[in-house]
Image (cartoon, one colour):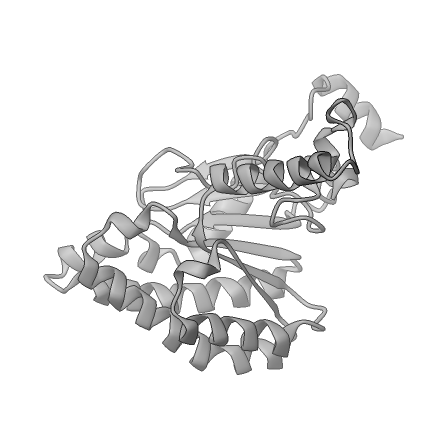
Amino acid sequence: MSNEVQKPAPDNGVPRHVAVIMDGNGRWAKKRFLPRIAGHHAGVETVRQLVRACGEKGIEVLTLFAFSSENWRRPEKEVSLLMELFITALQRETKKLHENNVRLLVVGERDAFSPRLQDEIAAAETLSQHNTGLTLVVAANYGGRWDVTQAARRLGEKIEAGELRAADITPDMLEAHTVLHGLPEPDLFIRTGGEMRISNFLLWHLAYSELYFTDILWPDFDARAFDEALRSYAGRQRRFGRTGEQVEQGKGA
C-alpha cells in the first residue's frame, strides 16, 4: 500500500475505500423503548444494505468499526450479547457474501474472543479469500493505537534479530505491518450518530481521508443517506499537500 498513500481515487468521484464508525445503535433502541441489543440487530440490516450499495457503486473496500478495544468496558451483558450477535451474523451472512463475490477480512486482536468465535471468523475468511469483488473489512477488538504499536513491535523484533537498523525504518516499513497493508487507504471516513471524533479508529490510515459526520443513527443510515455522503465526498478537492491550482493542472494533463 505504500504507493497508495497519496494516490487519489478515480476522477468519477467514487471513493475506492470507505471506512465507517457505525454509531447510534443503542440510542436508536432507547428512542423506541427497546433494549440496546435491538439497536445492534437493526444495525446488521444497515450493514447488509451498505455492502450491497458499495458493490453496486464499484467501491473496492468497505471497513466497518464493529467493536473497539475500548468496548470491553461496556456492561458485561451487552458485551456478551454483542459476541453472540457477531457469531450469528457470521453464520447467516458468510454464504451470502461469498455468493456475491465479497471477500471478508476481520482485523484486530482475536485472542480475546472465544474459540468458537475465532473459528467462525477463520472459516468465513477462508471461504471468501479468493473472491474478487468488494473487500469487506470488519474491525473487531481493534484500536488504532494497538495497530501502530503492534507494527512498531514487529519492527523492533527485526532490529533485535539483527535484520534491520533503526535508522533504516521508513513510514512504508511501518505501514507494511499494519492490519490494512495491501489495501488502498480510506478515501472517505463516515461516522453516524452525531459524534465528531475518530475514536481510535485507523489512526495511521486516516491521515488523508475525507471526514464526514452525520447525526443520523446507524440503523437509519439508508441508501439515501449514503448517497448524500458520497455527494459530499465528490464535491471536495483532495490536494494531498499540493495547491488547488496544481490539482487542476494535473487533471488537465
